[in-house]
Amino acid sequence: MVNWFPGHMAKTKRLIAEHLKLVDVVLELVDARLPASSRNPLLQELLGEKPAVLVLNKAALAEEAETAKWLEYYRAQGFSAIAFDSLQMRGRNSQQKILELVRSEAQRVLGRRQARGIRNSIIRLMVVGIPNVGKSTLINNLAGKEATETADRPGVTRGKQWIRLEQEIELLDMPGILWPKFDNEVTGYKLAVTGAIKGTIYDALELSLWLLGWLQEHKPGRIAARFSVEEKGDPPAVLTEICRKRGLLVPGGKVDLEKGAEIFLSEFRGGKLGRITMDSCCPDSPLAKTVPREDAATDEQ
Image (cartoon, rainbow, N blue to C red; front, side, top):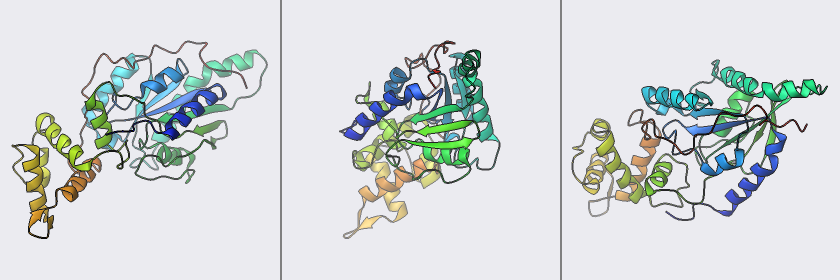
């Protein structure tokens, strides 16, 4: 896995830094399967003490009990945190719960404006997160229309765009951003298997073998239940049996391991192996911020 930080991500970093002063609240999306690993430390440095709402998105793919632990953990750190699934919660009141948290976080800056005689009550919101965490789909839910282009791949949102959500809330969407260097190799693998990194950057076979090994160790029984194979043994042998079960053969009767790897990754990402949380709760995370100070929000509007 190479080239974690291509040029467009460096540009996104500059965009976020330049536009932070224009917004009152940040809506940070993380993957509920990776509540720690998908929090970008580069974003934490940029955002500082800006009032924020932390959304654990794709919650339907994560283990419910683990998500509850992570919410409790982040709330204890002073975050307004909420679990959400931008694909499965259309038409429910979860969108309004997010906006209620946004309004609550914005009260300090609005109060200071009123004290200075400024009548502007517009709340400006910036949405940030890693690639393919579901920002565009969430925005479409909040806006009640197809406000942005969406796709199940990283790198769809290419530039900034303002979107009116409700009468008093305007939203600034930002492209997804990763960070240039991971503290450990496992973080990179976790981000790759959940789809945060483009498929052109990693080797699917290598990634699937890592995931097989991780599941064998941390979630025994999931592979056997999904593919009806004996999951004990080395990952290449298990993947070979999965390919045979699925009839993935090439001329000469050999198994197509590359095709099997792609299918295995796709089914994992789609939740076909069940709800899985890859980050165990709750480490003494270096990403935990302090409670936002009352003077943190901007009122330069």
